[in-house]
Image (cartoon, rainbow, N blue to C red; front, side):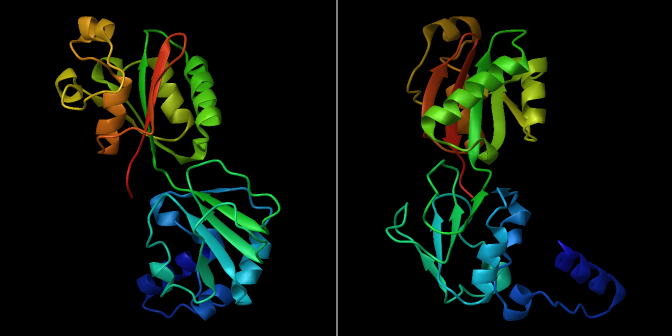
Length: 244
């Protein structure tokens, strides 16, 4: 973030910022800053130096992206000539360097030095019983991510019914992951659908056929789900993906 700070100070002082980092000087993406303005999280830094060096040397960099904003490079200039879009993962040959931008878990070994970014695309709809602790919600979330092959680092929003807005376990879970907790009224939940797995028991209690599924769809702004309702002991979850 030093270059961004220098640019801010230069603007405030009416001065000129002189950037000496190689990627900045060459008009190439800074590998450690991709998606920073949109909350992307970097997963592991063991190959960061190797990938950054390959970028500066102009070596071929394979780029695999299936989530997040597609114009992430625009702040650095035009699409670099040495960057190659990959049509499939894993790549069919080793690369000098790789960039992965995805909310999915995938094998990255033996393909070359790789930097993985996790854009905040996943919306988790949650329904739960009163008094459910954060640990029980976390347990089911970990199971969902493992079985569905999604990265927990891509969690963007937790969504539920407004009746659960003061639920301590949910509040703690959202705070633990550093994401907002969004709530919807029963009337709002009723506008989403049709639901893949409606529940008459939930309808009898709340007047709507579900909480986790419609909350996920509404918070993501989509009529589809990545994962329909998954039941735990006292928690239900559904996953949706919000567009960039």
